[in-house]
Image (cartoon, rainbow, N blue to C red; front, side, top):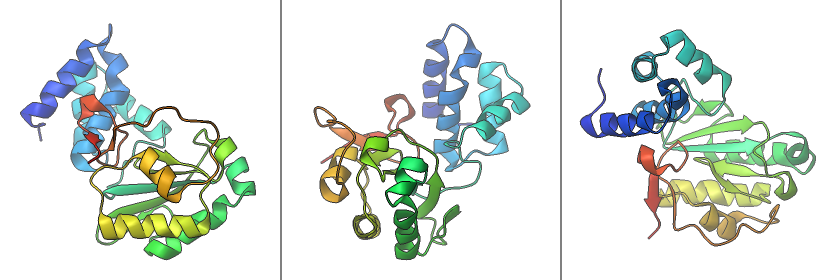
Length: 204
C-alpha cells in the first residue's frame, strides 16, 4: 500500500532536510504511525524505502522507543507517568483512576477505538508530578479526581485539538516550571503536534 500524494510530499520534504536520508527515520516513523494509527509492517517498509535502511533496521528503531506504537491506538493516548517522582506522589493512583473512569486497562485500547491508556516511564516533568500526557501534550500536578474529569472531557467533548495549556488550566495543578507564552495550537491525533506531519492544529 502506498501513501497518499500529500503524505508522500511531506515525506520527501522531511528527507530533504537531512544531509543523510537515514537521519529522517524517526519523523518518518511518526508519519507512518499517523497514517495507520500505529506502525504497520507496510508503513515501516515505506520508511525503509525513503531512508535507505532495511526494514529490520527501521523496526529496530521503532521497537526501541516507546512512543512508536506497533499496535493500533485510539484517537487519544492517555499516558500516565509512573516513574519514581510520579510514583511517590500518586502516579499509580492516577493511572488507576484513568483505567476505572474509561474502562480501559493500561496497555490497551477501548473497544470503540477511541482511547488508549498506558503507564509510561519519565516524561520529564518530575517537578510537576504526577504528570500525564494526552497525545503527547503535557498536563502536570494531576490528581485521581482531575484525571477522571480529564477522561470525561475526552469522552464527552471529543476535542479535535489537544492543548497542554488548556489541559493544564482545566485539570492541572503544580507545574515543574513556568511554561511561558501559551501555544496557539496542539495535537490533532495520537502523535506529537508536528506541523510537517499534519498533526498540529489551531485551537478555536
